[in-house]
Amino acid sequence: MKIKLFSFLLAMFAVANLVAQESDNSVIRVILSGYSEKVYSSEAVTDQQLDQILRCGVKAPSARNLQPWRFTVVRDEAVMKEVIGDVVPGNVLVVVSGNESESGATPDFDCGLATESMFVAAHGLGLGARIYSSPAGKLNARREFFGIPEGYKAVAVLRIGQVDKSVDGVTAATPRKSLEEVVHFRD
Image 1 (tube, rainbow, N blue to C red):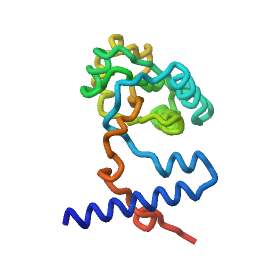
Image 2 (cartoon, rainbow, N blue to C red; image 1 turned 90 degrees about the vertical axis):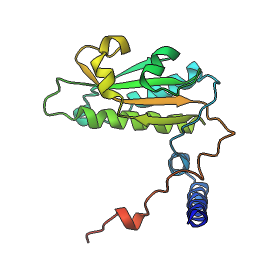
Image 3 (cartoon, rainbow, N blue to C red; image 1 turned 180 degrees about the vertical axis):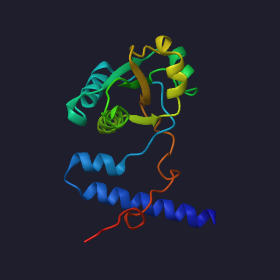
Image 4 (cartoon, rainbow, N blue to C red; image 1 turned 120 degrees about the horizontal axis):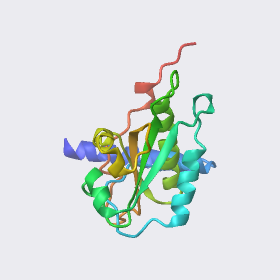
């Protein structure tokens, strides 16, 4: 069973790489070859990289262009460890918070779009990134400590860092469902 699973994962990885390599579009290549890294090195994310990533978050689409997000950048290792236990020096967390008072809007969804834009940007820069939504409750219980602006609630946390290149996270990754499993055409 393990050999079949490993063979399947290798085949999925090969297909994703083939599709990614065949595309002339760099964004598509990044999306199709990306994954959520779990192991990072202690090499720091640069200010320039972080600036580009945050700019991509600001440019995300939002309902009625309300842009209901605020980004709190956390670099302090002790504070980061309160959110995600296995962070390493050099990682950066971006807490994405949504405006709680926007009636009829979709701040959680819009914050998700901003988070994904930053996730893709990080990968486009050759960095690793992982999106967490489960720490939001812990963050909201201690808003001031985590720097969440008044009137906003944490929706997601984006972890950004340099990938530990000694770890093979791709072949051990959970396989994605096929298009046939998730796409339905109604003509």
